[in-house]
Amino acid sequence: MNRKAILITVAITTLALMGVVLTQFFWVKNAIALRQEQFDQIVNIGLKRVVNQLTTLQNDTSILQDYCSARSLELSVHSKFIHSIDPALLDSMVRTEFKNLDVDQEYYYGIFGKTENAFVSGQFKGYEDKILYSVHSLAVSCIFQKDQYMLGIYFPNQPEFVLRSMQLYIALSAFFILVTIASFWYVIHSLFKQKKLSEIKADFVNNMTHEFKTPISTISVASEMLMKEHVYEDSEKLLKYAHIIFDENARLKNQVEKVLQVAILERGDYKLRIRELDVHEILKVLTENFQMTLSKNNGMVFSRLNAANPVIEADKSHFTNVLHNLLDNADKYSQGPPEITVSTWSNLSGVFISVEDKGIGMASEHQQHIFKKFHRIPTGNIHDVKGFGIGLFYVKTIVEAHGGTIKVISELGKGSKFTLFFPYKKPASILNFEN
Image (tube, rainbow, N blue to C red; front, side, top):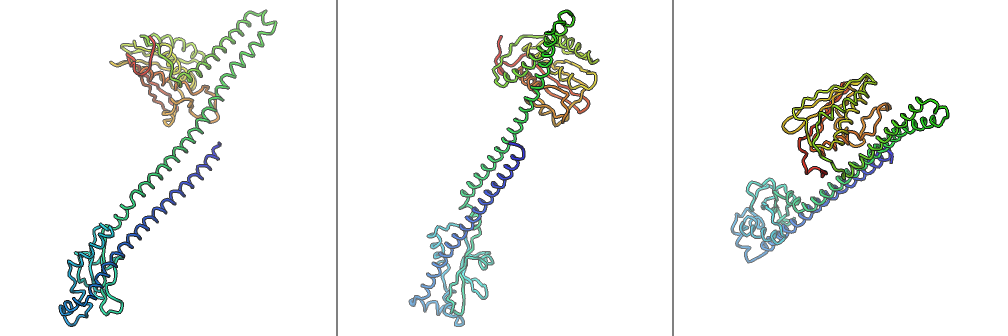
């Protein structure tokens, strides 16, 4: 899948996901509104039941004379009844009805005159304004009565109550939305990661093909020359072509070994043959041999071997390969005659080895990726530095297998410095090894 197709897929999927989230939000909002409406209906039923009881009580002729004579003659019969309602009786009616309807929320209520907004009875202590303008109110008086009274009730915790009653539904909705978003992010992340890995592998195959093509072509040309009869008459040319075939074959073998190294490292089934070895002795041999290579380009390798105790426990073959990889990189990424400095120092725990060059260096954003498998610093259309992008991956893996560490300090255009640390005693728990 090309990049454009991936971006289109991501865009469509993102829009679909946003649609699902918005739809879910819409349904949650509607569910909360519906729950609010149900609550309002229950409260309205409770108020109607209380008003019906009050109406029944007012129509009871056996007690009519009691409240008619209890108030001033200026009040109507209905007003006298309202003002004569026993607060304890009203409270009992309200609490009983709402208890029967399973409304266990805190509330305040009161009977007030519709015209003057004056409270006659109830439990309202400071919530008068809230009750007067509450959506939960019902007329206690008939429409033809001159004096109009309302029974109002206010729930201070109503929004929290509605949300609490919906909290499981809201929590599940939020959970599944988050799971969907997380899954979407993971799929997109994996898609781009696979795309990048595919590009890296394609680049690796191209580099490997190029690396193999050159020695194979050289061997082919040298072999053709050896097939010519007159070559056998010139022993010097014969030896020259034989050396070319030998060198290119060794080069081809080295490239194959590098590819096989990655396969072995990925499986993790390699074993280190741990022996005591002298870091300085190995470095002296390596730098002397490497100086012969650098001399072709007027390069120099300098040694500053200052470790007080250079003897460590390590696998000699892998240890040598690690140092050779770093020296080879220092040579490849140098501009002009290479200048490489190899230094050692030590502390109570182990030996430090640094390989420093004055080459092209690297930007800071690339330094954290150079130890990844197949990673190569992009150079645009310039392909003058050969390689598979597996050298530093191998170096880091082997160093850590010995219980050591590797760090890099680099500045673009000024060179790089790789510092290795090897402990004197390799921790046996890191990797199995043979004696």
